[in-house]
Amino acid sequence: LRVLSRVEMDGMATANICGVCDLSDDGDTLNLKFAQFYPMPGGQCKFHIVYDDVSRLFWTPATLVTDSQYQIGYCQQARKRREFTGTGGNERRILMLMYSVDALNWFQAGCIVMTSKLRQSFMYASPLIDGDDLLVLSRTSREGRDQHDADLCTFHRIRAFRRLALNLYPGINHVQTQS
Image (cartoon, rainbow, N blue to C red; front, side, top):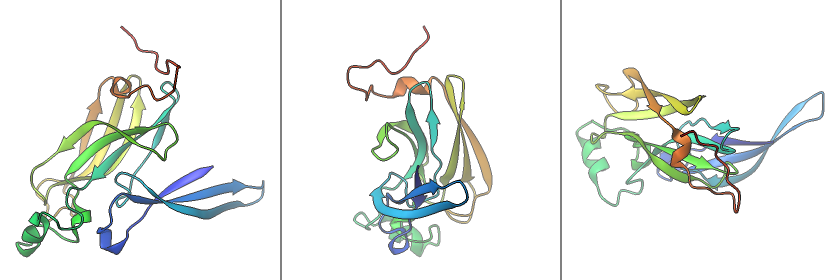
């Protein structure tokens, strides 16, 4: 069994990296062993992945960043105004829905929610499949001191989420959709 884990490198300046571990069970002991670092959208923040038996795909809400290496400069300006903490890789204002066949190679299904303010955020989102919909609960900072200090939780429903995925299985119709 493979396990993915959040990785914080260079104070989140290097975004979208996760740790991959192998989990084995000999009947008496669970053993977790590091296997490799791997690109993972939103891997710099805590993330949750669910497997959907209907589409045979893994799904995750991922917090994506736009300026992790300070190429544009708006993160530094916000830090000077004390509206943002950490590095550019700590930006948490865009929450995207991603899907994968193997939980390693990810495709974008679309934007769940986004704000234009750096101190606002959507993070540590947890997905739950509810029939044809995907429910997402996010720790959210709307009026918080910065992007990390959440002041509420927000609930998001993605209706008919499976229709957002490309057919990644060659020659196989993987999703049974209702008319």
